Length: 352
Ligand SMILES: Cc1cc2nc3c(=O)[nH]c(=O)nc-3n(C[C@H](O)[C@H](O)[C@H](O)COP(=O)(O)O)c2cc1C
Image 1 (cartoon, protein in one colour):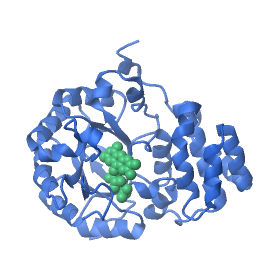
Image 2 (cartoon, protein in one colour):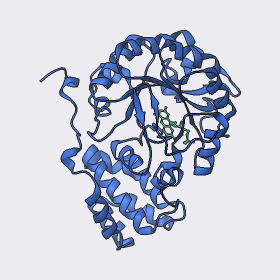
Image 3 (tube, protein in one colour):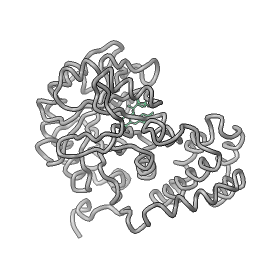
Image 4 (cartoon, rainbow, N blue to C red):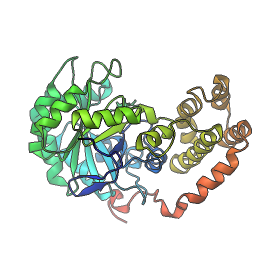
């Protein structure tokens, strides 16, 4: 039976308007990215993974990941760590910050994370993984979800063994990216495991990995029985992929649309991170937006060398003058800055 991508579903009491989830991506999933993904049809968006130790120590940059816009709902904030009590404390901060869900990362393959016993390592330490989910679920009243890889080694089936136990421990939904940690991003995601996981648990399963088109999304929904698909790399500098998957529009934007969306993204990111941090952060996005055969390669090189955001904007507009009108139209449709909460909730600082 085929599922309509535009139909709602729920995780616990949280209703999600479409079957598209925007993937959590470290160094990518800022508010500007999440808000754009939602505008193009994502039903659920997620923060990048946030260190529970960083939250617990009150690290200012880590706390910054808990900035949640007033219009950002439903939103999951993802945390990672290996100590159940520290994860529980972090989850309470996430709930206080206004997230609709707490997502737990059992998938990160990066050594800096796995060597601390967090991320994908926990797939091979089911006792600790369950203790973390139990502690987090007991600490918050919002749904707790888990995102996993298939396991550490190639061909591992660890996710199928630990998945049902995580549900018993309190997970209200599971997302599976069926590559091993060792694979990183090589090879392909083996969604036959997603189908197996769906059969083993009675909570919604989200399929992550290599979803790049509506055709693939529909195939996965049908073949695996997953409740939703997650889109990651395909949406980097390319919200039109989300638009195409959601069925709202064609995959390829005009040059003017590309430049207008990029400038909108640049402005929102500068508001969010400040110009200095945004300048470095944005560099990878220039290639993502302007690549895919949309603009000649040297154009990106030119932008990366410019000293100020103002110069970047001027250069972008010079490349597609008609973009100014598209940008004005887009800005006219967006909520005013006052409707977007960028400050941290006071409770996070421990009071007035
Ligand atoms: C740059 C980058 C950063 C990522 N950061 C996270 C993260 O913070 N948390 C997480 O659970 N997954 C993270 N992922 C994995 C994605 O959420 C997703 O599962 C994976 O990219 C496969 O989906 P895709 O083929 O649609 O990209 C990251 C992936 C990329 C490419």
